[in-house]
Amino acid sequence: MNTGQFYIDGAWRAPLSSETMAIENPATGATLGQLALGNLADTDHAIAAARAAFDGWTQTPVAERIEALRRLLDAYNARFEEMAQAISAEMGAPITWARDAQAWAGRAHLEATIQAAEAMTWEEMRGTTRIIREGIGVCGLITPWNWPMNQIICKVAPAMVAGCTMVLKPSEIAPLSGLLFAEICHAAELPKGVFNLVNGTGPVVGARLSEHPDVDMISFTGSTRAGTAVAAAAAPSVKRVAQELGGKSPNIILDHDGFDAAVKAGAQAVLDNTGQSCDAPTRMLVPRALHDRAATLAAEVAAAVITGDPRDAATTMGPLVSGVHWAKVQGLITAGIEEGAACVAGGLGRPEGHETGWFVRPTVFANVENSMRIAQEEIFGPVLSIIPFDDTADAIRIANDTPYGLAAYVSGPQDQAQEIARQLRAGMVNINSPDWDLFAPFGGYKQSGNGREYADWAIHDFCEVKGIAGWG
Image (cartoon, rainbow, N blue to C red; front, side, top):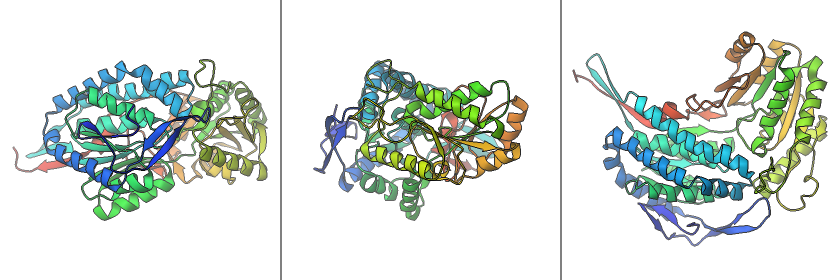
């Protein structure tokens, strides 16, 4: 894998920068290789390639752009197992999860984008005006480490089919999957300059993409703190900014026949991916009379977790991605204890038998007050906060009392859950554990960002709308 090079203008290029960083296996601490880190000149080189390719690509018929996505899907499927192994190694995801959730998400989003592009109305008449949707231009794509293929393909596929060219900056913390994806793009024989990749840090490569006047749009997924920096850097050039940021999602569980199952499912959803999901239902809201029962059930789910070698198919939870992130999660667990929440499962330190690697104990806090740090700050680890409520109005008030608005969850009688869902200030509300809908809009309210991803929602975000009056 080309960890020492960047993919620019259809070929692997030696970096102009000499700076590198170690790629760490978070489960063992072993070094997987040295990653080249780009500088401003490397980034400018990639932007220039994307700019040079834009006119030709955006004028390519939509059917040909869809065909390019089909080739990309075929190339992705041919290296599917390699992708799962890369994700498992770089972020410590258990191999079964890496295959069935992480690598699968990339495949599923490619399939959904192809289907959406085929069904989309690209041109239409309104009176005598022709309405045309066309690619916005050169796009800077900045993606995180926690769902690498989900987030890379959620941006690359719609941008590409919209007629955009792009420069991708994957996370430098977990870069192997992004490099493999560049190899897949090369195998799909995309036109030179349509897809480019430069590895590097946010303050260097990310900032350059955000501020560069030849970049027409930035699509960023990451923390709210970093998202504000991206938006500020993009403002002087008035480029479009789409952001999918943090979350502190409420999970309202009503008193109903499925209460026990909903509590267990909600707890498990927090622990999946070692809690490193922006839309995880980390605030569980339950009726006050059922609080202790919920705490017992959630603690049982946490106790059943099998923490271990990500290569072992029996492992259900891997490590956190890095030592820096491990320390952050430990700090917030400490805050929960100090603020008086009841730690009914897990707690500080590593699980027994894990002296190396960034493993963490799956943790459940009960009797949490919504003003506590563990209820207000995104922990991004396997830490659940259980908050009691007095009635439905109280549950809605608590659910909306957060600076975030990415996702929300409701379990209970369908009609009652629907009424609650209408009142929740979140971009995505899930009722009674539905299947993952790849055609639903993904994005948030408030400090969880702006814009929407998935299928045609994402394609529209990468398009400009042109009206040609007097056409008919």
